[in-house]
Length: 195
Image 1 (tube, rainbow, N blue to C red):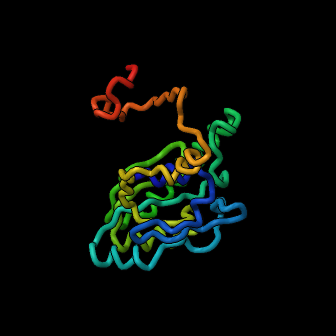
Image 2: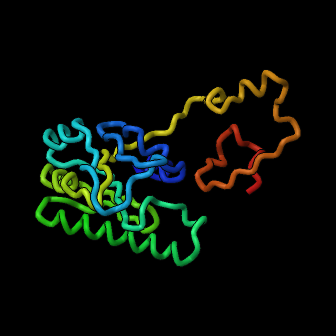
């Protein structure tokens, strides 16, 4: 369920302006597409479809995009050690403040993250309203939906057809895939998996 979340963090702020499927709204973005740091601002972005869904179903799973006091998320590999610690502490503090504001509502903590400014929750309508009222710590709330991978061949998606058209066919190329999720018994990989 959280694949989209991590993809968004890895791709930077560009994904912040995109609506989430299944009822999430566009997330509030500042200059460069990043959410504004904590300290106020407009109301968190929550789509009407998500509000309707919580009314209909009673509880919904959501992803809360936090606004840590240190500002927009910066990939840890680009930060000095002290800044990594400060960013993690700011994420933990924002997460704790959001959770404390939900104490009067029926909610469950699905997942807290210590390296990215997101929080996965299950909330009722009162909890969703509390998240929307938290302009200091919450940039946006989107539906936590399962994004299934596309299993159909996607040669055109990676523009492989264009490469083939100019004569490249992969002959003499060795590809290494380091992935524990590979089905090494699949017939397509017969005799091609080293370990």
